[in-house]
Length: 382
Image: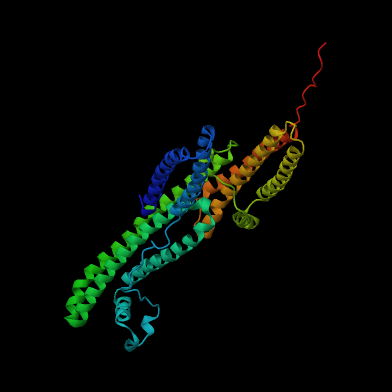
C-alpha cells in the first residue's frame, strides 16, 4: 500500500466518521430550534446529504489522483561513468575528462565490455524518456490509468535493476582505473581481465532477466483487451458504484483522430451514428420535459424514463467502443507493440459486436418512440 493509498483510506474513514458525528450533532442542535418535529429529520438529512455529496466528489478526485503514476518516482540514473561519447577514440587525450579517459581506455582494451555497458546505459536513458512520456500521457487517458500504472511499475523495477547493475560495473571500472593509473599498470590489467568477463556476463544476464517483465507487461495488455471484449459482449448497464463515466469531448476527439488513421470504416461510422442518435435522443428528452411542464396532468413520466434509458444505453455503447479502441491507441503513443493475436481478436470482436450493439440501442430508442399507451376513457355507469 503506497502513501497515496494510505491518504485515501484515511480520507474515507474520517469522512464517514465525520458524517455520523455531524448527523448526531445536527439532530441535537435542531431540537433547540423552533422547528416542527416532522421537519427536523428532513432538514438534518438534507444538510448531511449535501455535505456527503461534496465529500464523495473529493473522494473520486482523490482516487483518480492516487491512480496516476507519480511524476517524481522515476529513479535517477547514476552519473558515474555516464560519459560514453562515440568518438572518444578521435579526441586528443588532453581534451578528455577523467571519465572520458577511462571510457576511451575501455573502448580500446575491452570493446565487448564497452559495448555491453553502452547498451545498458542506453536502456536506462530510454526508460527515463519512457517515464516522462507516460507521466504526460496518463492524465489524457484516465480510463487507461490502471493499465498504465501496471506497465509503469514494471518499467520502474527494470530501471532500478539496470541502474544498480550499471553502478556496480562503473565502480569496478573506476576501481581498476585508479590502480592502473597510480600503481603497476600491467599487474592491474592482468588482474582485471577475469573481472571483465564476469562484468560482461552480469550485464547480459541483467538485460536478459527483463524478459520476465516483458512477459508480464504483455499479459497485462492481454488482460486489458479481454476486459474490453467482455464489455463489448454485454449490453447490461454497469452498476453506478463501478464509476464508469462517458468520455469527455477532448478524449473522444483524440480517439477519433487516431481511428481516422488506424481504425476501420465500420467503427468510425458506428461512432458517428451513435453521436447523431444521441443528439436526437437529447432533443426528444428536452421536448418531453417541456410538455411535462406545459401539461402536468398528463402521465409522461414513463415516456421520459424510456428516453433517458435510451440515452444511457447510447452513451454506454459509445463508451465500450471507444474504450476498446483507446487501448491500442494508448499503446502506440508509448511505442509499445500490442501482442498480435489478442489485438487481432479485439479488432474482430469490435466488428462482430457492432451490429448487436446498434440493434440493442435502436431497440431502446424504438421503445421510447412507442411509449404512447392510451388508457380507455372512463364511462358513466347507469
